[in-house]
Image (cartoon, rainbow over all chains, first blue to last red):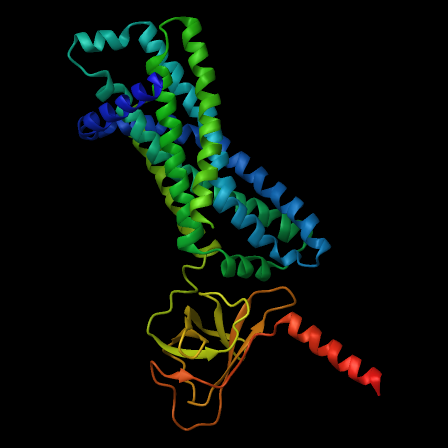
Length: 243
Length: 154
């Protein structure tokens, strides 16, 4: 409870100092580079394999019912609605969240944050807020890339390798995936997950005891709590969106 | 890492992200196909719409000519009123026939329009009264059983 309250306080501090960090946009851009661009490789590679596995498994089941053309719909809907935002958020927590926690925790342990306060530079404006916004901006971009690459991976398995009809693959997909219901909802999900993951990572780093052990525990907690939060939020959002 | 390279990489990320979202919207989703401007709406009255849903396609001769806008229940006549948006490029005679069909064995339901022979065309807001309801499987089965039972009795 205390930690939840402290987390909320940190969130409002971030909002207050956001104006300052938007004035120094290059700080945010630098963080988007570290959080977003450097996660691209892992996102693209895993999206490709997730899409290919969906293609294979989906074909195996759909073929029993003689409707293997529906594989495009299956791959696209499961990626756009669920797997895109969720898997991206889980990878994001592991790849970027841990880095954020460890970095901030170490800054605290080596008293860099205190040094900043001594120089009348708010660590929230200089360190925390740019990472927060970078996370929120990066997440939907990464999730969109994940979904698109995953669909291409599914296409690669279904059409050239298994031999599902090319036109049926795309046309069934287009007939059944709705822009405002499915794609926009997926983007909303990824924004929420981006918020949750970045906020948890920032708070754990900021709250970590300034020792080597404290930072290592905080990093572990970031991954555990972020993953649970993403899966829990996903259930809540799904039950709101797709009833 | 100097500032220019950083900006370039972030720019690339944002560009790929937007291209991916655009690709999802046009290639995967139906943003392009349902973006028909210049539609006019007509109402069709059905006794039973089966599993017809809003946004279901309206086809004539197999070509998608419009979409179901809304379905409401009329408490005065106890009919379902299906509001259909039809592409403004297509006109239909006043005595057009509307059927609810199913695409494939387990597929979604759609409305098929069969043009009649009237010289006047349907105007926006007109109603189609010549309709054929969705096939309800239970009715079909009971009809079949009834027929076979009466044949067996002979």
